[in-house]
Image (cartoon, rainbow, N blue to C red; front, side, top):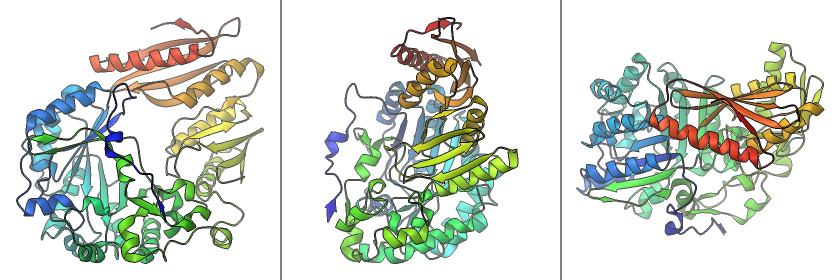
Length: 522
């Protein structure tokens, strides 16, 4: 058995001088009105070990997180809406200029709609992530141990849809709810939900449970793969459904929907009067994972962080069959890159609709050979990224500006980060070299890189923060040197100004790494 890397929690704490993460989540305490079989918070509440968390230290940490450069914050619990600090924290997040505040809730207090309106009235840019623990009333309430909790969630989703608010759903897969998960599609889509995320139960987050408890609660590895594949198939094309921490070998046919880890996230937990030091969420979640020795031969080994040790202790390794040889060929004849096949098909369909000549050919696990018009290139998945629904890509080879613009737009429509194709032509070569550095290093700090527009002798980048947009132009002067100019749209706040200072400064500094840019405009 191969252990996951031995991660010491202290080594994962935020280090002075380290690069600041941009996403933070604050656990407001364990107090909860559900008793979910997989979660420590309901158990601690039932035992009288959870209560109201102190507001002042949470407020200080939220302010500190914003000062460190975080732009997105998630408030969760327990159940965050039970905490008296909930609405005051939303008002503070609005004042601090967070670009998004995610409310992770079980939908109990929001069922009347009153709390939703109060949250909107704070001025925070909110999105709701609803914890639904079953695709039917029976499976949900078997899991939450709370009568009426399913109906309250449905009312919450109806209120969110009526108000045009963003709603996503999170589910923890366990023995009590896995049988009917394909039923999610029939009622989540009409209620306006835009995303479903399904994750495996993590035993270390379950509280004080016996081994008999785990034996009854852990989802059966030999059955959940087909259930998840059927669930994905039940949703209409384009719906964002993804699965976290599932070994790829259990459902390789949906490999493009499976991911391990996520965006770098700093987590801080409140518990009464105490507040934890920040830790790296996904590094910590890997520390109790293991891999059977046979995983080394699996096509997905490099992208899979394994399975929580409790599963193997109770269920063994029989369900974890490496994806290799004949099995891989049966799944995807002639192509190891299972995760790129759906993307290739969608690009070809888009090209046909828009009159673009496009053909694709898989080369290996990481690369797709494309011919776009008269240009031949390789679209290469960045090696350091796990297989995911939204990986980043790099382009190898030269591509004409017209084809480059089409490819960038097509990939952006698929939800991929902006790419920088290298345009053909001698006059564009210095620009291509500069763009390659910027695409690789992403030196724009807290600014969001929203789009790339390519021309033969200039490139325009759209960078943003909050309600302000920076339109950056890179061009060549008479000596063939790269010049940089920019214009701003919108009225920047003080927070926006600081983000622009960092992002545009970082952009200019990275350009200077190869050649001295001449600055124009402001």
